[in-house]
Image 1 (cartoon, one colour):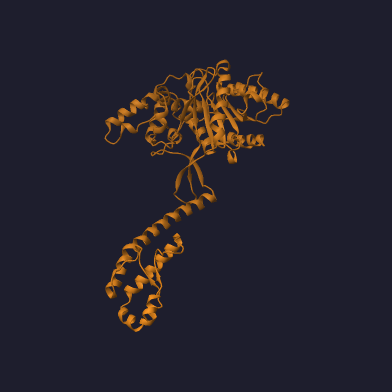
Image 2 (cartoon, rainbow, N blue to C red):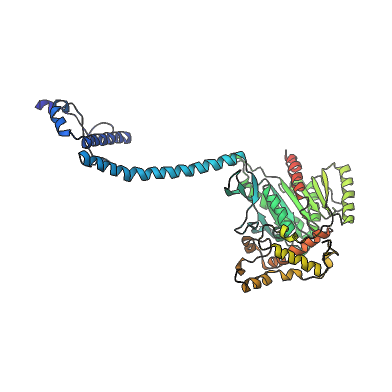
Length: 489
């Protein structure tokens, strides 16, 4: 018997010979734990060992060298200790697993909603609900002597899943297209982002996935001048495309970029400038590439007679400007016979009334423009003889009307009202339709402009003679995507 005991096999967590791999160590640790738990939970351990002494010689002795092998005690005390340890370790682990699975489930549900397609794409909003444009101002330079400030807006959309309240920001790395925008005489490029009509157009464009590039003029409150602006815009636009879009729109595995289509919008003097650019692009496309328009929208301006192009173009004219409308129609008739280019003419619906709730609807996203303030503006316009109190129609051309109504509602006046009120905070006052983030991006002269353009532009649009307009712009964007995308194929 003594000799048999000497031959008993002893297994260790770290045996002197054999495989010391991680799997082997885990296996031995597990066997140690099972042996120790079996030993401490057996109430008749001593009697069993005496009656089965012979069998013990054939058992493999497992020594405990690992942390889980702990002595909790024997009998009922041991069982109680094991239950306590189990509760302290596994119950919190179970609860943690439950919460992790719940979060995982929410992510799965949201992804399923997105795979089904978003129920709507909307522009980002600030905490008060105002459309929030994240304007990026850059000064582009190109040797020798070309320098110009450019205003950039990348499409950044809030995505709302179907049938759910989940809303989050979706950044578009490579935009669906680029819309180059050129304003008219006496207007800042930045006003595209804060004037009533401009911000509506930008909102529609970004919701369609287009990036916005607005060039400033050599004289910002002047008009576009080909001698001062033509070559500069060409060189800086090419630099922007090659530097900013080449990486964002690179092909698979870093292959050459496939640039999105380039679209153009120009109003008044800006429309004439877009026509000049389009004509030059047709004459020398290699000199302009990759800055080549796929489609264009020219508003309230007829092309010069010596400008010719075959770029798909939408002309937007106002019904009150019969002279411009006739010149546009004559040019289109002539060019369609020569180049067979796809052209479209959109004419606005005519003069529009200014109802008591007009400005509340225009600035539906801005809580500052309440029904009370909108009604007060309407009353002031009627009192000063700008609109007919019975029909709400604009009586005379607002461009020549001497009025100071906007000053009653400018930043300074409304901040004074807020300071005198116990329920208003002056720091929350900003120009109508301008978010706090956009406000930080604007220069002082642009903020001053935003303080009045909200009224002046709307009255000009109502008069329907010569003003930038968002009327029909959805049709313009559809035209862009249909004809411009097909042009690239």
